[in-house]
Image 1 (cartoon, rainbow, N blue to C red):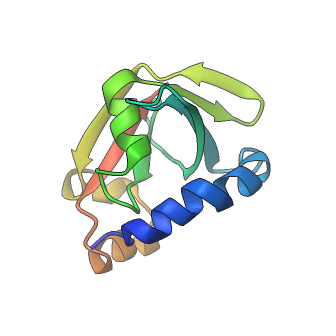
Image 2: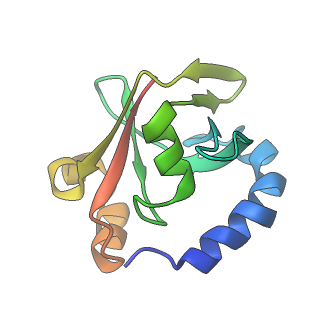
Length: 125
């Protein structure tokens, strides 16, 4: 059971704009820049990245795969900003938690099981 949608709406409207400038400078975090599917509005969503050995990264979908930012990047891509570098997303794909669980820290594996988060997002940039 991912985090309730009301929390996601609150973060999207208020929290993200304040933490985005700080988060992009923290190790292991990034900002996904994407465009709204219907509105055409530009958005910046802070995320926690887990790097993989193949040059891609995993993102735990705390709000589920139906979160607006996830649907936006699946539909039309976007860019990822890590530190000062900004890169176009080449591949965006949903992956099953069990197939990538070994690549996540133990505490994150436990949290995804407890919260019943079954899908992660694999980003190649």
